[in-house]
Image 1: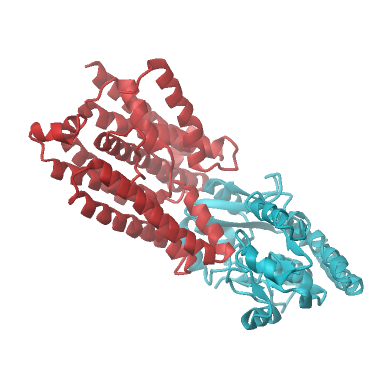
Image 2: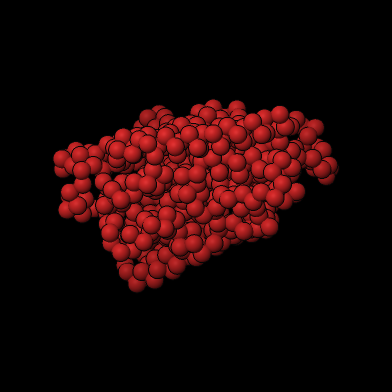
Length: 326
Length: 278
């Protein structure tokens, strides 16, 4: 019961963070500005609130939640606290897709970038799924995923070596990651896909609990390990792919939030951990997004700087306080 | 002499001293200096690999009297390796200059290396005079507001207030929208700030050469349509040879910028290094 209460509390705080995300920024706005914007008044402030900050904040909320959930699924499945959403090569594949798009001079449009990152990461996902459905050992899958990542990374380096410096510069900007590119038109697509994935993840709570003790144990508990494995890999890769396509590579959230969540809820029950990690991921990412764009305003720090800089001390603090990871 | 960057080519080009180049850390991108491109094609100038990871064996084989390098935090390893291999090198820091004229004046450095002091004087005086002439032409005109930058997946980069771009804008007698972002080089700023300050910007320069039309620009981010210069279609991007020939013709770049900002004063003038988006 207490845990449900904490869930509601974090949910309330996360909603407040969305409100803060819309209200706080390098351009000062008042509550009245927000009311005017909602009433459809045309001004640059209204435009900034509704077309720049709102989609960005929703993007950070859902994107952070997705990365955190992806991290939790993989940490549980691999029984490895260092696993994160990018461990199976998704981000390297997205990077490679974008590198091909930019460095080969195919185009420059925003949806070209989103599309190329998505194609790259979905191809990698299919590759990983093919492996996941054939092998029996989680460790083998983890190692193969890492190897895929290295191969994609190497191909990307080859493209960089032969590209013009101007194009390389544009590519490097993409790798920094930011939720700023997300527009209001993207929000329905992102929301629908990510929220659908959340519901699918809830169905996995029971097999995930069994997998905590290893695949053999899960099998004896009546879990169809192969289906569970493929579902976990599919969901985690798919979530990482969607976020990476729209926001580039956002570090740390996927790795750290599951730890934060386990430490807060002091449980390993995925019926609590899944909603918990979704809400903690959303809250942390919105907070880091606000920090990244206000702390040195009008200069913006890359989101990954904020997530690592503020996330790492939180994890260290919680670990030292509780002296154990759940 | 082995040189590292296309800016070195530009400087040597300015004083007709490209004959001394035997190697260039090229890596394959397009070269807009015709004579150099031709020599690279024929192998008279050897491509010694990229500036971040040159082929030291090729450099050694060329037995250069001197390698001209620039050093950034990303390529310090090149300097260390040249030290280790006992290859004589000299560091050129022209890219740190915050004034385009200061940048152009670095030809004196190359002149000293190649005994071309006479050519240098005439080249630099010519550039300086032309820039001052432009400054005089526009100095009493009303200053338009200019916004300069590039955007990529919502990430906006603009030149800082003490960068050479800001200085060029000052020469062209325009108000730079980010004159409060101190420092040299560029800064990442928030999209909302870019839109807010662009709301009344008369001219916009997109610092990338791959665009043809305003439509292309809006494909990068359709929210840029809020910028006044975009609504008025006074948007320019830099030409493909800006980073090579543009560095050789600083005076033309400044004149181009002045003409973009004050078209009434330069009727019939077609900018050379800025392309207006259709």
